[in-house]
Length: 278
Length: 288
Image (cartoon, rainbow over the protein chains, first blue to last red):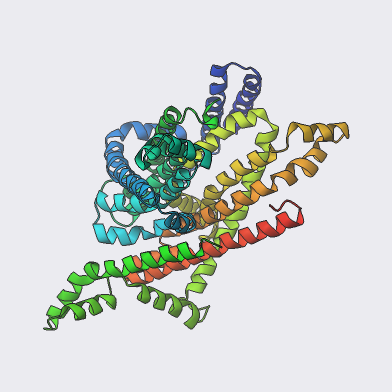
């Protein structure tokens, strides 16, 4: 019981520290606030698990997970490269590129645009992950089927965002390009694609999370004996929850880095957009 | 309304593509079957054979719709083979998860709008929580809740769908609760309004349009969450379970019809939300 009490006290103390930090204005200090909050929550978790002697089958302590993580780095790396690098990343690139190309292709026909937008928006809201068993059946157990699931999942969000983005320029801007006697291609490259970039990146950011989900779900339906989804489902069966948590930590890390990378590129490309001018 | 024709064209084009794809996808298996019964197929026969296979790699659209019709209208709703029955189970878990997620999202949003510390410490983690693929958590949530002593799969499914739908609500509500401008806040100050009055009479009403926009995204996300919760876990009831069972028994028509049933359910839920939105906003005098 002492452990739990102590952990709660530490949590409260760190929260109080956060309250003080939040009032100060310095930029570096502000970045510390969420980190301290995360640390405090980990300490609380550790304290509760140890103090109440929660069985590791229900909830392992963060220290146990960290230990498992360190000893299992080779396995985790194999799983990571199978699921994220081969499955999710290649699917992400193919799916987003295909959707982008298609959006540019239908761009010349307002009729098709009007048809694709509501349809694509509807499809983007559907549980596409359900196609995973079908695609695993078609493309086999290795990473190709995982990439296929990812392609299908990221295609429509990316398509609707790009189509929407290409419509963003207003008549005044297009007229200006016309007075410059710009060709279709020039207008597209110099005006409309740059103007579409905030939307394109919105689509890419949505696609990053979908890509990981797709790659992992597809592994539940059959995979070679490696991969994050495979490891999670077998370790859950063996009640090795510390390994499951270690895989989740990898997934969270991969997801955050993936998202962060796209967000950073966005910052570089759409520096002119109001949402990026801080 | 003027987009009806284009949308129909797109759908017709997709259906045509689907029919065309059916032939090469199933051809190999059709030829194999014909060879087994010592029949040689002409081109027309081959195409006809690929359209109505028993266990096709890609079922043709009319097979899927026939199965959909058969398992919704023709079967009794209480039958285990009725998609209405499975859809009902999925719908129940979705609505529970949706209610849970929306309450969590609104509560966090209120906290974030009123407390700077909360904003700075919770908001980044809420963003990070969405980059964790929920499916990684799904099997564990189910093991966890069964070892804590919760029977059945309703609760874990609802937790997973709540996890997916709280975030859009949180983001929308933070925006909405902050939407009253300084002028309006100042006006309430001149009335001597208390903090609670500012919340109930200004901030909350002006957040309603934002809330409904998020609810539409949220309910679709909640359905995705429920189906994901059913998929990898050996559930036996629900639309996700139908997909899983179809996969295990090698029955693609069953998978496809369950997928379409899920699509119809998603469409119905989003439409319902839009209706609620227009009625509410009209009564509040906010309709655009």
